[in-house]
Image 1 (cartoon, one colour):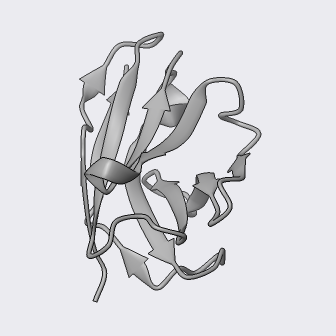
Image 2 (cartoon, one colour):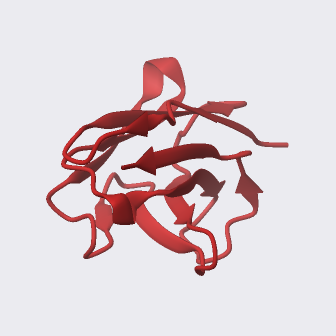
Length: 117
């Protein structure tokens, strides 16, 4: 059973930065496909950033150039560095994992709230 625990969400002003963390157990991120999703009130969930088992990264157009997804295998942790935040980035952010990349991963964290004002 894979467990994901996110942290790092906060309230920040527009233009600010945050780094979200997601600790993955057991065995860390390994060669799993790891994805950050977000969901704002009244909106559909959207994939924000993804890193596959080979290390290839993909970003939603809305965050390209501002967000960076990366892993620290030694710490079994996935990160999302978010810069130049704007109010449209306000959402609950979730990390998700699966053996391969899919729009419906099997394993999800509880979420961490990001609010930009």
